[in-house]
Length: 399
Image (cartoon, rainbow, N blue to C red; front, side, top):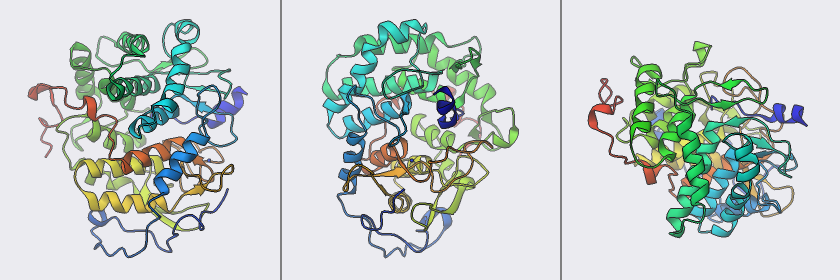
């Protein structure tokens, strides 16, 4: 089973049916107006307004008896990140009961799993909750985000102890240079400091204090490209220093982040033929390889465009995403969105798992729902009152 988990893993430096009867299929990729400077001449009819409800139906269908959300149909694979995303999507839709089922599960695992690991929940596990593997800081930060939103939405402190433990553990990962250790691999080796995880934790830990100052110091000194004026990964392979999620999450998380980052993300823009539908789709890749359209990241771009009031780009991206709907194998009315349009490489040169383009996934579907609901999961803690002199992204010549 561990082998199966490894095959399914998504890199942290960061699922076959056609849907022609559910959604309109496009013969050409839908233009992204401002990004590609193509006139807004889209005359195709988008999917029906019930598509959001159909995606929610699918997400509910993926919830198991113990509250956990399976990441993709018939995979026996559960991701902490996907469960945090699903909880946030349920909360944003007012379905606190389903969110509670997810949060209850992890709250009940504090005494055994969390403390047994000396902090942190496993990144991956089976549907039963067994055979957990790898403790990744970034996904635990996403769980804290979900708990914080639940408390804000319900005006309660039901999971106060869970939030307290998650925050304290995230704080404990900070090193002298201000960065956060990424966690622990299954073989006991340390996960390096990952930019995407750090900015997520920066937002998830509420308020602004020395912890947040330390992260900003680290990012400015070690993860800011002064020439490109973008956050970078600083991987061992310089060819993969630039990652789409650092453009999208950077803009959505850091207050006063220059909006031109969304134009810079054009470097990842490409068109691919969707495996399930056989139609061209415009969207964004993980990295400069531009060998897939990463639908989760493309939805993140749509949300960033929406936050920037660039509604034309956001709407056109949504239409491209909606052309990739795949019907649930367990329901005639439930639909979801695959992880990528086609098979190719993940962030870096590692190939994606074999069902990435033919089964709907929680991550892409959840971010699509965020866009449709105009829900930025980072907005609640975006305005932290960062001193102007500490906003290196505005003080380094960025416009």
